Length: 451
Ligand code: SUG
Image (cartoon, rainbow, N blue to C red; front, side):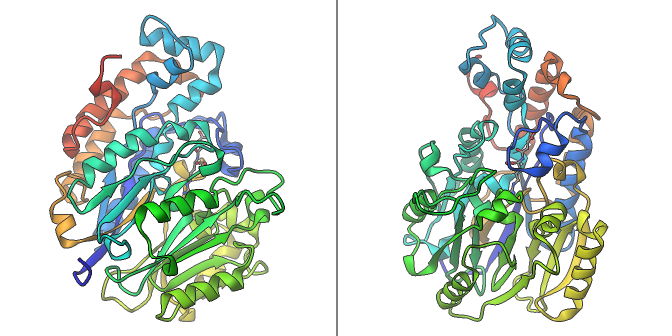
């Protein structure tokens, strides 16, 4: 299949109706510091949609992925909340274990950079595109996602050139957080790429571990994915994340480094051995690797985490060698140091010649910036043409989704609203309508089996 024109398609996760602040992610500084606050699901969903639509308007291939069903009653039942009806299940959970109710209500599936690891056809032994949903077993509220993620991915990537793998076995040994710790480098999207897998834990007793926060990706998980996807070992690099960065709030590599095509944009303190990472990448890539390394004295680790500078989207159009676009969170403009750095970068000729800013405040408060909200999938013409799901952004879909959000989303949501049975029904009505609009079939539990 290689040789045909291919694009990077960004699939953005639509924010779900239960978007709320429950402080669920230990080690994610923004999530912890906003726990208990009142959220605005409608504003969150509109902010995310506007980002996707603005990239589509600029000519980038852009699509969307649906949110998951929350509150997730099957999870609450599995945990022993066994009322005779759903209302009772919600109320029991709310009274006895509000933290478990919050976990079963989290809209965290919006951060689709954690949905799966994807290896495009140009990189795999059989010439197919391989997908593995992440097991997300480090955080309970996220471990609920992989089953429905798998169904959604099968519905959207249904043609025979896609190979769907099950998530890795759940458990600390194979903790996998998906594309957030995987970066693909290449000259053109349809030429063989080099995969950089970044892990926080190699399970070797002697290695220095983060002292405060958990490492959420293991080396063993990435190695298993490489085997499943049939990646050529000489084009795979494994790099260990700096434990100090994890302790500063870098819970995924995409909070401290990003890359696209031949460009690596990273913080000086991202990896344990940066020189080795660059050397290996350069050797595997063959064409020239461009590197923009941000020194700690220019932007500190703390500033990088607060502004989410490296969670920007690094984008380029095929056949456009004029330099990349960086779509950065608005927080980067509000921080004087980071803003000045980016202004200088734009005119430096280093490889990023345009920086734009986007307001994703609602998602950012939970630690999800522009890059967390999207899953990158390299697709060729026929894969795009064969996609039966109505997920590619155009003016019409944008308007339909805007109207759908305005019809179904609450303007504000407090943690105490999560037991409201009306919320459960609102979510199901909305998702039923959405699955028809997107033509993805019955992917949700409530559509498949009587509860
Ligand atoms: O897994 N936050 C998500 C944010 C994920 C960001 N993704 C990437 N960097 N790719 C997480 O920590 C917070 C939910 C809450 O606290 O209610 C949360 O799950």
